[in-house]
Length: 303
View (tube, rainbow, N blue to C red):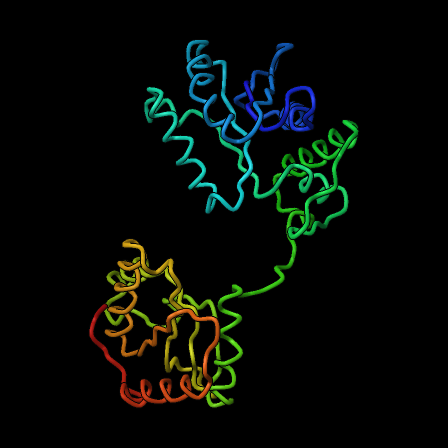
């Protein structure tokens, strides 16, 4: 196995961590015997790893099925998530003549933060994402942390150490909106957030067709739902639209949600994301939309 990682060769803890972790985990696609099972290579920065990966993949493919290429890299503010980073690797690989089938043989490991944060969390059970992790100078600490992670992986069950309470249920932009919304509602409705679309509307048809329609909306969520305080009947859906809603894909998803809610008889109020909101204006708009639709108006047409 060849493992490409970030860091300066000879002065990086990544190689120590990867070697220890992969040797202890003993995943089935690593040969059980041989003195050169894992070969970790520090390549410099992330851009260096991206440029080097296609050539290393060609070398591994020429060696045959006994050699696997694994790529370790950090996500940061320049990439939205692991999928976006993987797309960057694919763009460079395609440019250097790698086929999609060949690219799919690579094993990618993307970390949300630097390896120091992993080690700090494995040692203490906690880490502050707002601060840079403490520098680790001793290979023994690195190896011990990798050993602990390997033991958790081999346990084949969720470990309490690997979970922690989120600091916020909703995003920063949603929290800015929450407080004016709370004042606008004034206790007349109950506010629920991050609600599944399937919990707001349901298919009005037979069981077989209902199963199909439920699947089509099961992955969708809405930002806020105002409900009757006694019955919890959904009265109004509120979506907070930031710049991400301007993309063609998100616009298509929004149109689908609007159509489903309209058919289900639930009004929707789309609020453009702002730095501040007027509770009085929100209250007037909420009342207008609920009264226009009718508090107990149910639409039984199939969705």
